[in-house]
Image 1 (cartoon, rainbow, N blue to C red):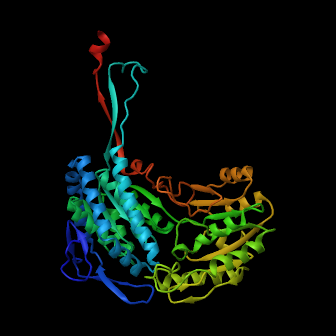
Image 2 (image 1 turned 45 degrees about the horizontal axis):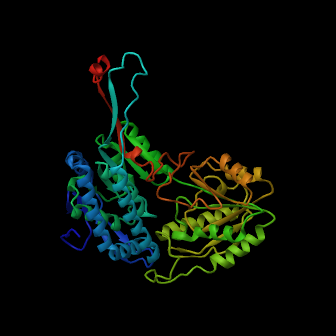
Length: 492
């Protein structure tokens, strides 16, 4: 990797590892044991402005690198990802508190995203408009080409920092954009290392800037800068609103994937094995997933069986322990503060009438998988109180219309799911839910790389981040007209 002057992690600005101009730092701790891992710079405004200014210049240089050469550079990057896979996965586990097997999967997803980005840009075609259909333009050849936007700011969340960084960085770079990345304050180390490897692979150094610091300052400085062509954020609704307010001053484009409170409707005719398995996926990453079931809407006739089997077969069988052990499959939340927030939300829901039937125990950043029964649609947990942890609120319904009404109570519209063997019921749910995705016999946690993902509905954002449509978000279409190009042909 790029050599650093010390063991303390620094920011990456124009190919150099640097401190903040004011030497301010932020501690990065291991949420599992609370120990200090590293310190990183807390960027000053002049650091942010310099990174963006250098990115503007470097983007032009990077875009002049022809597509097949960009592909060669990013293929070298894939080789480096393979070489440093163990180190990257270990760093990811240490700073996030997720089990190492999850971290390996996330680093492997970075590889796949960059590999796919290479291929989709190589096959991004322009269009030729049909001739002779509009009077006055019979001799004009009209075509379109795709161009990069310029400098894209990538604001990365803490829950899947490597994977979600890759979805932003891979297509943007391959399409000829420069990126200015702001990793999550709590766990920026893996993203910093991934960025450094891009420079090592041969990407124009100024085209990959990484500034560290708090979103309330660094994020706003980035959003205020008129040289940013697009702001790409995965984060909370309030963060999205704040960034949008700043972006509006310069009419800066933005793509957001925000919060979610995904419903999972489980019908009376469901395959119970499937229902329990899909619901149990909520323990992944200790429940810190934007998409994934957060409200379990179960037909009253099967609710008791579902709850019993969920607890006995999935929640009691999670394997806790050493996060570096490949057998461990349940870790901790990103911080003790995050776990305390989940704890408070659970208490609040119990205070509104829910019944705690399993879990509810917190130790530091650890929060035990927890089941809350007797939840109702008038509770905050059914509306817009997104619990970012391993909590299973159980709602019941009698009719499918009632289930849909409960599901639609939230202003979020990220993903959703329904478990049923009735095709007509499945189609009714899919047509009725205003969410960006509906999984039939699956949960909202389904995410395939090619499939459009993101809000697109309600308060969950406007991004559709995926390999099949991401180039629409990181490039712009330019029309080129060759006037009278066909005049002699038509005269002959």
